[in-house]
Length: 329
Image: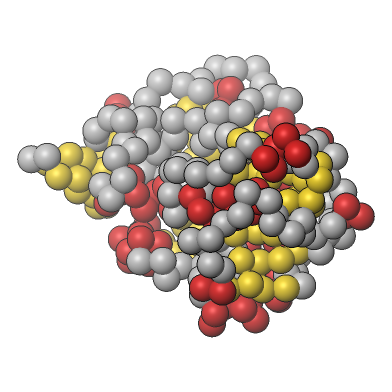
């Protein structure tokens, strides 16, 4: 039975420990598709899982990595065959099912998407869950009526993977994009991605949020939650649309119903983790075509499995920006 490298997350004496180990195929979880993993990526969720900083691991031990791309070695599902290039992201991968930080992975066929024409396995992981989430947010907002002519779109948590990719995609689609960030030193980087305006979070007085403020935004992609999301809701244009994709600042939302009943504002919850078809393949097709970020390679760096602990540390300290691809095999 083959042995292979994996970044395993364990619970030892009540504490989360993780590191590179050698395992064999007997540890693989059930699934119809066995994949030789080429690349994975690093997301904030991966850092929380591997360090125990967030209690999101639902079973121990678990190989980390919520994303993976690679080549099918074997499949009992007729939708896939040996040699196919594929992507698997989200669902239980990396938190309750062995994930992408391993040279071999086995997953249910329903979690697997064929690599679309126009994307390489590397580019698929430069996008990963972050790109899929950003694209899904934009698609859901457009389904709700958002269009470039309606007005500007604000993106919060702008230097993160999801935020940066959302800025790039929106700008490519013709939107005027405002980036909200707490990192003044990254303003030029955000303009390079396509932001026409950069607002510093420190310039906002979030202690005095009015139920209805000046109507500014036609759309919003919010990574933060909390008071920032409440401020955004109060300053949306009539029939504006907010895509709520994260809770990096807070899980709470203290607002009134006034933006929703007096301006017709829509608040959309974006669940990129478990959304299935027809969205999943359609989103990946758009990521390979009209929504493919122009600055994808420039905003991406590559590390090996042995460099994961340092990458997790940067994410947890808020020092990471852009995307991190993990070269697995």
